[in-house]
Image 1 (tube, rainbow, N blue to C red):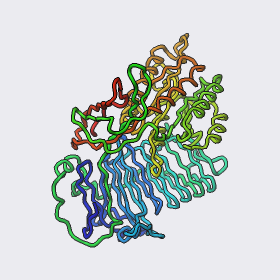
Image 2: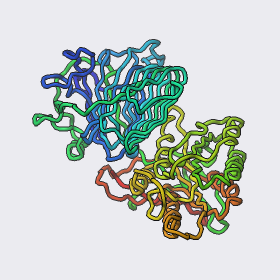
Image 3: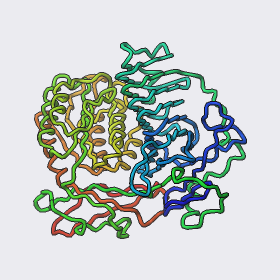
Image 4: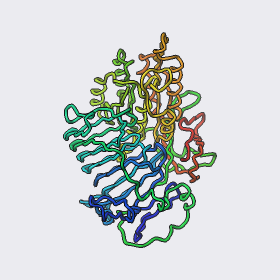
Length: 554
């Protein structure tokens, strides 16, 4: 829907979110950024109710991104630098499970051609502290003040500046291939000017920064932020609150002052799609069924049949992320782990992109998603035991975030996790564990649009002292690895010995070849946080669809 000749553009979709955007005033702000004091027009932005610990991805290939972390529970977005008269640019907000994607995109004109030089749009975004954030630009600069729960910041050629608010607690991994890392903090110094890995305080948050040719600046300041106008007692009602959105759904938009604005000011909010990945097997033979079509499936939510809007057959390609536990206990068997991963690469379909992430104390991207099998084999062949205590939950959360990064070429996604499940946070396991709680990770897995497969590796041994891993910890690791796969709509595999790992990987590849992907928009639009049970029937004798059993309507 496009509306012209309105100073604010408001949507009441059928519905998850109501959003409004208008021209942001920059008068009175010497830096050209939105003025936040009383009397400014800084209200003229977009407020988005945001789920606790939700994911937010921000993409701007046409300008800068300035982010500030605040204590409010919603995201607030404004634009500057010609947004009201931008030619060939649009800001798009997409509703995703457990979060949003905010993108500045090039827009074709009426003839279908793209404007050669669209006017830049700079984004200023205020973000809740609990969010998991990803920010990406082309040549645009990125600045971030404060730290959310986790942040991944990437720019091709833009500078990146991060200002920590004291006391700061973050694990930091920064890299600038062609630029320099400058730190105003004596405890954060790069050995060669291009790479920095360090920890501030307890490392409660995670920060990853990568730019190819830009410079990276790290600084710190005390938290002296004054309250912004939006926090004052005269704050206008948030149009995106759950109560307002529910009442407004299906009703006319309120009368608004009129003023001509271009389509570049319009924000489009997509209603939420529920995506399912279903492996279909024959219960008599336990073999996967291929060659099914959309007409073979009927989908029900809480007993009500739903219309399947998107369908991908079992032959559609996947993005496959191998997430491999390489903590210290694997030092003597890392050769077997490498060999098993190579078997997976050889068994996967040539159309499937594969990426590899290893972890112990920190996740490390061994290979980004690629079709190049030679590159994969080279990088897997040199991967080695990782340092630090096992932080399984934070590594899994990192992999979930990585799976959302390629929004230009989206594919079906599966994460294949290999571990004994012994996160250091489990009672009876020695060492420092994940700060991310297991229940919070499970919520993120539940909202994941892809599938999560887990391969549990049996590393149990007899505990001879209180410093050894205790039997109940091994049991908890097993149970949680199984629960993650069940929640993630994948399959749980028991691997009793490393010699069996390669065979387990091959079974995962075979299972993925029977996965069909379906998406629908729920007929029940209420977002009441209640559980919605999903059932899929397949019109074939003895056919069983195996995948996620439901979701919470948050």
